Structure formats: structure tokens, C-alpha cells
Image 1 (tube, rainbow, N blue to C red):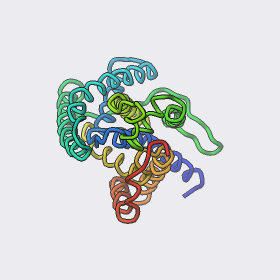
Image 2: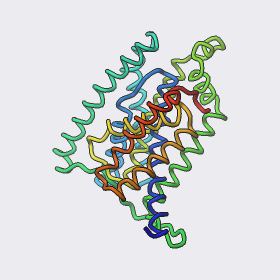
Image 3: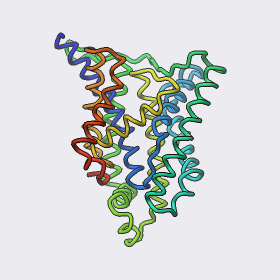
Length: 297
């Protein structure tokens, strides 16, 4: 393997892993603040990819306005999901919220995948593939050339991580989310309203998952039926990095992305999905304490 090819594969893994990290952090922050294990989280990523593909390739919207429309639409959808599916569970004990949310969001995930695949094949394309290939200049890093779409994905990931960090440590809602994640009872004692924080976290988390999906298909195409696989990746990264831990999610996501890319190169693309399962089994066996953590640690 030449050094240029090694760096190219490494950058590809960083791009994919950074998007895994964003998806996983929003997934784990929802879990830490609301006790909701959103099995449909990866499906929202696929829905975001589908929405962006529809807007850019079939409606003719430019890339940046399409991303803004996707973010706005999924903020509204996230609010509706909270009102319809999560808020009715809010008065129950945490363990009942956890079990109830798994059942409800699993049903939502199956329904969304089936409807998306059926209607996309019937109304838009017979073979549903979500992918974007905008005309963006390539980025040259010495002998390594990064394609324009991957460069956009890399810049988005870096910017989103920076914005998330600032939101968590500098804004009031970020500090409230960290407080609720660390100790919900203590947060109530000092006057915080966990339901208001839960609404904001779930809504923004779903929006971030959808936007990550829209950016993800700049680098790797998706199909309507990959949502549950992506949810498993989010759970794996959360387990490895610690629930609600942004630096940990970033490190674990990048490591997993790089491992998948090199596994696909050396062994074959068909084996790449096995990487996340092996990582998850290893974490559960040797570091189960990573499944507990505080937001923003």
C-alpha cells in the first residue's frame, strides 16, 4: 500500500467516523437526558439522506438550501415525535420509559423503513439509492486528493463538533442538558424542568441525525433499509465512548470509521459491517462501565 493510498483511506475513515460520532452523540445524549433509547435514530439518518437526495437530485434545490430545509423539517418532525411518542411515557419510572421507548421506536423504525422503500420505488426510482454528488472542487493535500463531496463532509463534521461543544459548555440549554443527564432529581431540586430539556434534546438530536444522513451520502450511498444498522453503530460508538461524552464519541466514531474502511480494503466491503459488532462485543466484555456517563464529560 502506497503512503498516498494509506492517507486517502485514513481520511475516508475519518469522514465516515466523524459522522458516526455525531449520530452517536445525539443518540446517547437523548438516552442520558430522557431515558429514551431511540431505536429509530438511524432511520432518521436515512430519512435525512432521502430528503436531501429528493431535494437536490429530483427537485433541483442547491446543496446548502437543501440542507437548511432538511434541518428545519426534522426539527418539526422531532417535536412531533416527542409529543406523540415520548411525552406520554414521561411520568413513568426510568426503566419503564426505557422499555417503552424501545418498543415504540422499534415499531416506528420498521414502519418508516417499509414506507420509504415502497413509495420511493413506486414514485421516484425503482431501485432506491440515496446519494449526492455535487460539483465541488477537489482538495489537494500534497500527493493525496480528497474529492469535493468528501471535503464538504469533513468540513461539516468539524464544524458540527465545534458547534456542539460550544452549545454544551456555553449555552444555558446545554448546561441544563448536562445537569439533567448527570442527576435528574438534583436538576429538579434547583428548579430545572426535565421535560423542557428533554423536548429540546430529542428534537435537536433527531435533526442532527437527519442532517448527518444528508451529509453522509456525499461520501457513501445509503438504501432505505440501513436505518437499524446505523442505530446499532450509534449504540456501539456510545458504548465505546461513554454515554453523553462528546470527546469519547468522536474518538470512538473515528476509530470505528477508520477500522471499517481498512477492513473493506483488506478483507472486502462485505465484512465492514462486522467491524462494529466486534467492537460492541469487545466493549460489553471488557469495558461495560462505558455505558454510563455524563453529558459533556
